[in-house]
Every structure is written in structure tokens, then in C-alpha cells.
Length: 350
Image 1 (spheres, rainbow, N blue to C red):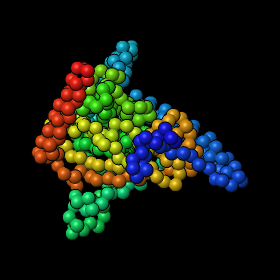
Image 2 (cartoon, one colour):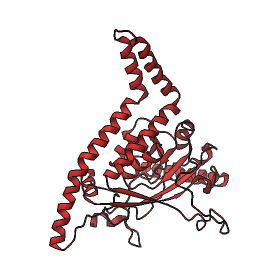
Image 3 (cartoon, rainbow, N blue to C red):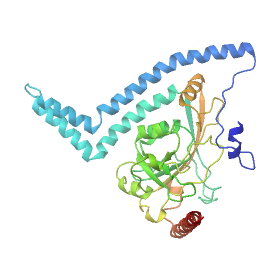
């Protein structure tokens, strides 16, 4: 653990130390626990493989491009009725491509049914808890509420979900709950540079990057601003952003990357705040570093893995953009850019 010591703050909190699997100290109990764990592996691994395969096949069969290609191939076959049916299938694919709402309805049905079973196969149990908006100053202390609203109430297409970044498991959960689009922060190559941008990802892309290291600008061809992605998808799906840019173990929240160009945010976008915490009795699903296969092994090895989600829905967060914050953010960004240019110029002179 010494290699992680430089990331610890003065209080001793370290955001990058991975979870360490533990077994009972008693030899008999330890032996029985290992036998039980391997039995769980034998049951769950085939189940996870089958569920993953079913999900991938369903996503392929319902993709607009695949449906259009299938319809075109049917029209090429000889036989009575093939031409009409083929044109119908081809037209359905074009309709789903042009009007993404039809595709989203099918996608939600697949995600809600299949991915929730996959989370059960991974022994993950998510407990959703509303954050104390009154203590945070977002609600009046005198306002009484009988029942808290469920997570994501009022979430609509084009809204923004801001979340901490701890594990691939949260990608699966978010997809099963909301079927959103994802963004990944692209870090600059130069140390100290303030220019930070994002790229848009689908579910598979977000899942792939959730088990890899941070994305550098040299590895991507095109980047965008977060406001541009929100504006383009205001009628498509919610957008998820992980502003920490790198995964942590959930013990601390890192400083956000400079991606919130608030003055250009769509006025219709509501902001939802999520905080994932994998601090249950089982093996933590947090995955700051290390290989993914050992993480999956120990997750499936556990009988149950608890996770908590603390959330603030959109109607409790301040509206964006806030003019004063926008002005201060732009001034701070300009000052950082000038400071960075001066440092670069002085270095070149020397």
C-alpha cells in the first residue's frame, strides 16, 4: 500500500486504495466459506454469461441499422410476400433511426428487464437513499415531507446526471434505471493545462472505459464540450457525466475537471446529483485500480454485496446556468490559462 501513500491527504483518507478481500480467520469456517464461494461461482458464472449474451443479441436485433439491413436482405429473396414484408422491416429500421423515441422505448424495456437480472447475478444490491436536502440548504427546514421521492423522479431527456466515479457496476445500474448517454472526461497531455473536454459514449463504450485508465487527448480524434452534447441530446436521453475523470474507492470526492461551461448550458437541462457508495458487509465493488477479472471473481464469490446511492433530484438543485457563477468560472478559467501561458513562455526562454 506504500505506492498509494502520496495520494493520501492530511486526515489519512486515500481515494485510490483498492478493496482487499478477506476470509474468516478460523480454519474450519474459512474452509466452508471457500467451498460455499466456489459453489456460488459455479452457479453464477454461467448465468452471467447467458444473461450477457442475451442482452447483446437483443441489442443487436433491435438496432435500427440491423433492422434496415435485415429488411433489405428480405426484399432480395424470391417468394410471394417477401418484397412487402422486407420493405416493412426496412421502413421500420429507418423510422427508428429518424425518430429515436421508438428505439428508446425498446431499449428501456431491454435494459429494465435484462440488466436488473445481471445485477442480481453479480450479487449487487443497490439501496437508494435521498440526501438530506434541508441540511444542504436546498430545502426549507420548515417544509414537511411524508414520503421521499424515488430516485430520478422528473428525469427527462436532455437532463444531466452528475455522479462520482467508482466502479463499472454503477454503469450497469444507471443503464438499467435510466438508459442514458454517457460522457468521459478527456485529460490533456500537458501537465497543468486547463483545457479539458469530453467525448460522448454509449453503454458499451462507457462500460469499456470504466475498467480502463483515464482517457488522454492523444488517444481520441474528436472532443466536445459538455454543453454541446447536452444540446444535441435534449430530445434523445439523459446524459451522465463523471467529472472526477478517474475512478476512486469512494472514500473521497476529487476536484472536478473543468468541463462545466455553465454559460452555454441549455436552459431546459435539470441537474441530478448521485453519490455511489459500495461500503457494505461484503467485498466492495469499488474499482479504482487493478485488473477487472480479479474484481469480478471476488464480487461473484460473495453471497451479497451492498451498495448505497445518495441522490438529489433535479427540482431540488439550483437551476443552471447561474449568471454569477458563470462569470466567476470564466474569470478563473481565463486566469489559469494566462498563468499557464506565462509558465510555458518562461520555460521556453530558459
